[in-house]
Amino acid sequence: MPGDSGPTPGWRGPDVARRRMLVVAAGTVATGIASLIGCDDGSQPAATTSGTQRATATATASPAASRELVRPPASGGPRQPGHPAARPRATGKAALADESTPSHPVYYLDDGPKVIALTIDDGPSPVYTPQVLRVLEKYGVRATFSMVGENVSYYPAIAREVADAGHTIINHTWDHAKLPTLSASRQRAEIALATDAIHAATGVHPHMFRAPYGAWSREALAYCARTRLIPLDWSVDPRDWSRPGVSEIVSTIMRTTRSGSIILEHDGGGNRAQTVAALKIVLPRLIGEGYRFAIP
Image 1: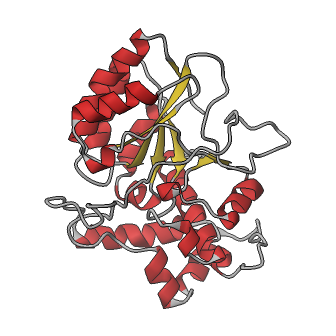
Image 2: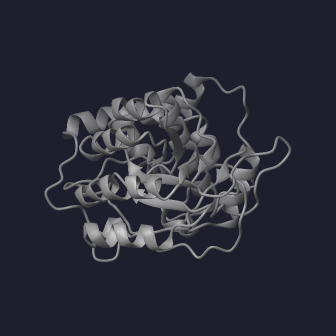
C-alpha cells in the first residue's frame, strides 16, 4: 500500500519448515491449478481429473509458475498492498439469480432502506481476526471476510473459526495479486487456488470474489461469470489499512455510509489495532442509527 507496501515491521510469520509444509499442502489441494495455467484459451480444466492427477500436474508444472503462484511470505511477514478507493460505477443486488451473474463488480446492496454490509479483508490473522470476531459477536453483526488463500493455508483454524461463527468467507486471490498485471491463466490460477485453500480449511466453496486493490480485469470478470462467483467491491473505504487514526476511521464510515453501502475494513496484512478499536465505536453507532447488517 502507499507508504506501507513492504512487510509490516515486527510481524513474523510461521517458521520456515511449517511454511514449506503448507506450501506443499496448498499445492495438493489446488483443483486443476496446473490445468488452469495452461488454458489461455479460456477453457475449463476437465472436471474428472483426480486429486492425485492434479497434485502430479502441479508438481510437474514449470518451476517459474510454481514459484510465482505458491510461495511463503518474505521474511518479515506477508505483503499488504493498499486498497485505493473504488469509484462506484454501477449498482446491483449482490444476490445471484439462478440464471445470471453480474457482469460488473457490485458496489452497493439493493436490499431495502438502512441495510448495509461490512466486509473484512486480507485475513485470516491469528492476532486480529479473533479480536474482530469478538466485537462482531458483541453487537450481533454478521460480516463478510475476504480471505487471501495463502493466509488461509497458514491459519486454517482461524478460517474455520470465522465460518463457525456464521460469517461468510469469500475469495480474495491466493496472494493478493494485482490481477490486471498478470496473464489470463495466472489470473484464473490466483482465484482457483484461493478457492481450493478456503474449501480445504472450512469445507465452504466461496460464492463471491473480491479483486485486490479493487483492480478488476476483463478476464477476472469473465472467470467469475463462468464459475458463478459474484464480483464484490465496496463503496465505503475508511482506508484503515493506512492507519489514519481511530477517530478518522470512525468519522469516514459515519460520514459516508448510506443505505446499501458496502463498508471495507481489514483484519490482515499488518497492525489492525486501529480497525478493531474503530469497530467497537462504529458498530453501536450504526446500529443506533437504525442500520441493519446483511451479507451481500
